[in-house]
Amino acid sequence: MSPRMRIPVAATLFAALVLLAGCGGNGGPGQSSTPPATQTSAPPTGQVATVDLDIVIRADGKTTSAEYSLQCAGATALEASKHPRAAEACELLAKHPQILDPAPANQMCTEQYGGPATASVTGTVDGKAVGREFDLKNGCGISAWNDALPLLVDQPSAN
Image (tube, rainbow, N blue to C red; front, side):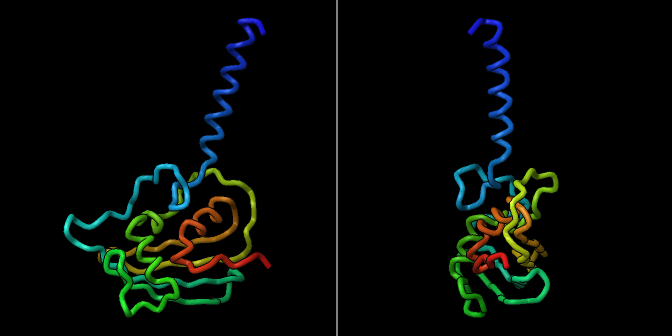
């Protein structure tokens, strides 16, 4: 290969790597990438985050198929929780509070469809209102749902 050809080939390879780097996940618990900046602030040192959430799952995207309530003191599930994976969900939220942050608006996502299922998570974390919608409409939604799986209990299959 001539020296003149090496520069365009190297530039093309670099551009391809930059584009591929943008296709990574959102840095959730199952991934090795650095998590995004979190909008859900941690409590001051020495205090335990309190969580009081309602989770509504709609397997068909319309009709409520499951409802859960989750109460946590830090990573510890409280007895008032009505959630089948409460201990795991509280641990997840203590380690990754950004799970409840809104999804980035201009995120590039693969066009794969995981089904019609949706989930709504509303309530408070340390007295601050939170609300997050999950769906399986594309690769970003599937990834976010998988990252939040202990909170959302399971991933309904496409019908």
